[in-house]
Amino acid sequence: MLSIQRVATLSGITFLAVSALGFAAGAGGHPMLNMHTGMLLGLFPVNVLHNAVHMLFGVWGIWAGWSARRSVVYTLASGAVYLVLAICGMITPSLLGIVPLGGYDVVLHLLLAVALAGAGFWAMWFAPTTATQRVEQPRRAA
Image (tube, rainbow, N blue to C red; front, side):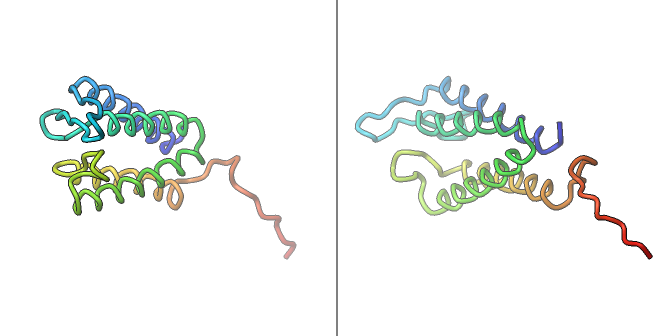
């Protein structure tokens, strides 16, 4: 298993754990879409939709961890999504009034964006290729 596959798998497991903790934090349903929010660890506002998104990223990460190429796509795409969420959180405390994004979530989303996208770019540009992935060029006669 390559490092990027480990990153995708571990981030997927982490997202699933965060989702479970968010559901356990008492984040409620949607009284007429004015989504009731709970506080995860007393710092991060979460609700059912927020936890469902974390669950989807978790499942996607574990699935992506089975392949190096999917892992790179996962880390780059997740990094981009979390960067957009961090920027949205700087502008408004909730996305369309249904998903809480403000507070410490902005910093957390920004750190996730840098870590995930950084791992994806590292794997694309700097990670050594395995012997089976190298394409040998034919030698020219001198």
